[in-house]
Image (cartoon, rainbow, N blue to C red; front, top):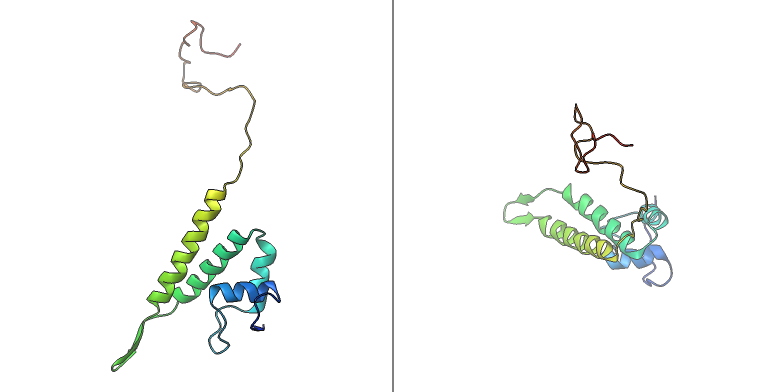
Length: 131
């Protein structure tokens, strides 16, 4: 697996999304090129891609532990918090964009008490069975 960054986000989708999530330091890479390309190929909208990228980065930072040695300490919780907040923003934007659900024009065949034994009398005075 490879990690590359050209320094110009307009050269490729991998560089673009690497730039957006802040994965531009070769000494401390967050995701590999193949991982980013998989997300880009799998999720087609930019909001979905960014949500997946920030969620993946948050997952990576969630594995880090707080370390300290004498007066020096490393606490990855701020990075984790940032990436989780960014993922939540893109999740909210994706939900606001909405997914259209189909509307059904079929008659309603289910009714309250349809499985009652014996069936209840319906309001029209029948025995509760469908005719």
